Structure formats: C-alpha cells, structure tokens
Figure 1 (cartoon, helix red, strand yellow):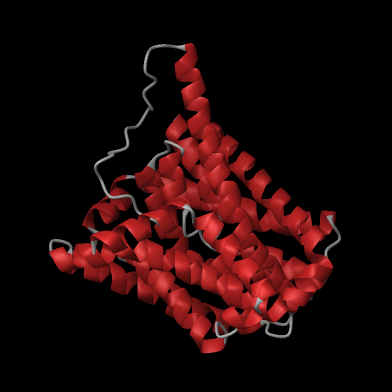
Figure 2 (spheres, rainbow, N blue to C red):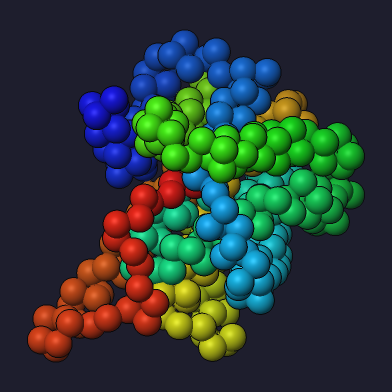
Length: 338
C-alpha cells in the first residue's frame, strides 16, 4: 500500500501531464481509450466523484456550518461569472453552436476535480476551497441545467429534467456514498489506505475520460482546435482574474482571494464532457470543447498555483522576515484532491 500511496501522490502532482499523455496516446492509437463511452463513461465519472466524497468528513461539514457566508459568496461568484463569461466569449469568437454549447457546459459545471490541491500549492485557504467545491457540486444538478437552458436552450435541444436526474446520479450519489464511508470508517487503517490511493485513481479516471473523447472526436478536434483552445484559454484566465478581484471586492484575505480565483477558474470539465456525450451525442464539437478544457484547466491551474508560490518566495527574498499567510494551512492534515 505504501507503494500505491506514492504512485497516487505522483499522479496527483502531475495531473496535467497524465491528461496530456492520455490525449497524445489516443491520437496515436485511438483504440486505447475507445472503450470509455456510454455507460462506461458514466461509471468513470462516478468513480471521480466517489473519490471526492471520500475526502469529506465531519470537519468539512463543520466548515460549511461555520463559514456559510464566505462559501455562499464564493459559490454565487462562481455560478455568475463563469456562465455569463462563457456565452460572452463564445459570441466574441463567433463560435459555432456546438462549440458554444461545450464552452457554456464547462462554465456552468461545479468546481474542478483538482482545485483543492491547487489551492494548497498556492498557499490559499484549503478549508474554503473544500467548502466551495462541495457546495458547488451539491447545487450543480439544479443550477447547471437551469443556466444551460437559459443561455443556449433556444438554439440547442436539451432535456433539462433528464440532465438534473443524471447529475444527481453522477455527482451527489457517489459523493454522498464516499462521504458516508469516510465518516463511518475514517479511523480504520484499511480505509485510510484506500482513501490515500483514490486521488491517483481519480486522476487516471479523469485521463480516461479525456482519452475517450479524443478517441471518438479526434478528427474534429484537429479541424477546429485553435479557436477552441483560444476561447477556453480566455474563458479560464479571465475567470481567474475576475475571481481574484471579486474576493478583493468582498474584503477577503489573500489566501481566500487565491482560493476563490482557482475555484472560479477551474471547472469540472470532466463532468462537462460526460454531460455532452450523454445528452448531446450528435454534437461532436461540444464534447471537443469540454475535453480540451479538461487539459487546459489542469495545466493552467497548476501554473497559477506555482506563480502564487513563486511570488511569495520572491517577496520573502526581498524581506528576510518570513511572510505568514493570513490564514494558516495545517501541513500535517491530508490534502484533499477534488
């Protein structure tokens, strides 16, 4: 188990590289991930959300109870900025209906699967990150279909009620099961071993989803790749900036501003990919946009976290006095990888 723990840590550390590698392998040999479609993809998504749920315990729900205002503000900011920004970027680049759908899907999904580890590396507020990711995931089955219907419902035929039920099944149910297992067995040695391995499993599952989409829609990606990457980059980077300055507007501390920047900018594009292939199987471009976002968000979020960490080191070099963050992160506490 110690070896598996080490592998899991390395997979979590190099999430972006693993995802890029999966995509590259698929372009060379599409059959590698061609099995990740339909019900199999739903199961893979469920595994990712189960891994997230297994990191949630009583202390996390206490955080939600103790800091409802911060988390409420953060969730409102996320579900306001990213959907509106998505449709605005789509119109700015005059994207096709399919690419617009994919970008809006990404913008209306909850926080990303790796936002907590990014917040930790950025010296952000990890508890705040956990709270935002949890709440955004809980309300996603309601908010995502509503936003999607409002922003693109007139141009894309969709089943809002079906999407709501699907998201309940794929997000809330596995998260609830994982969290319940954590609360019941958190003191059991065998469960701690399993929980320690789950972040790596989630990364591999995430990579499999990207690979599955690349296997099916790889040709279309090569045809429309540049504009997709550019639109997703603008959506993501502006999300970081607006998230950070929204935290400033509400008088949040530096760790909180860094966290809200990452939580707003990094979306659960894996879920967006699953929703696209499930509810819009004939719309290849929407799945392509979501799959590209899977890769881009992982890479850019890791880079942003490193920039924040580099900035602190630079400031410390200028000032010999150790700069303390305004809210301390407990280094001894296991890091959650959502």
